[in-house]
Length: 473
Image (tube, rainbow, N blue to C red; front, top):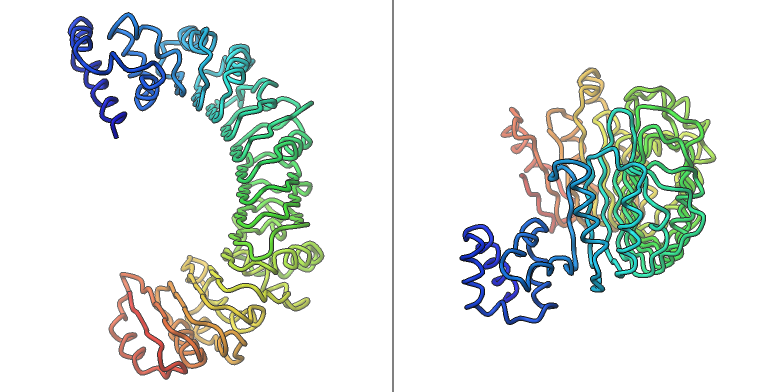
């Protein structure tokens, strides 16, 4: 609190007072008597621009900003490349021996792509035991990414690395023993081995996020004994037969996948009782259109990818919580035409996005989740549903009763417009057959013209569980 108060005071001084007045004021206050390390800690609470302005406050403060533990540079705040690099050179090439906790560079100038200034900056940052490095680069139409120097791959103290739209050099030797978090978004990798080595040679890595460029058809291999959290995002209008993902991370307990490209998604090892969020339709996508909702595509391509889908589903079957997209639900349902789903015996939480005419799959689908306690159903009311005659949608019926409804399901959260009879059929089916249900939440569309009529019918539905509460939102 004290350092925050001093930082606010300094910010006021450099903005409101003239240099001579500021120096006079500073002579009378307590800040001028603070030791350098504490003063630098206070200055670090200001923006880099504001911290540099404090150099006018006194002779003692003239070079104090060069020892700041953090630096944030935006190239667009400088008049050109020369002034940007000159400022950076002054900070990184100073004689300061203080440690650097964090550096954030935002580069708009494409002429930096040869990395000549970044090499010396990174060398200095590594020597000063940098812990957090963020580099955001914005490419232009010619896709000339700023290239990161080799020095990036060898740092004993680096804990967090965030890179956005940069090009990486070939990883000949990597040593990042302290790295715990790595975020790689729209990176230009020279080859598949560079990414694999980068992960493999980070033995303390716990959190990894990858956002793949739309034209990148590489196979991404994640081999890590320490990784706990993974986000993999590859969405592209293009289709690549060679694209794929391999995951071998026995301690992985949180995984988010959004991938409409990879034809192969192999999981060798993840922790049981993991938490998953999956939007994966690359298995069946064959043409460059938004086609994840066409049933004919699933009928044709799920059999062709049967082996890959089989291995993937069995690899995730020990998860305790899962959220799946509409396309992923369709893949799993069409897969049941070939063979049963594996049993997800550990799963207690399941979140499914589905369309109205896919309600028919639910009873058979839930047979694979015998111990489910919490079910979220999100009705994705798309135009595709509007093309299906309402009579056809409302003909969907529910007959079989899965084990989880009889013995374990306690909470249901249904997010649906409730414009069709099939939605009310589903609510009636769940209330009638869920023997231990404690609460059913029904989130209606705000523009539901039949709301009052639906509510009158709802209160009359029989309930298998005497303690079940129905909440309408």
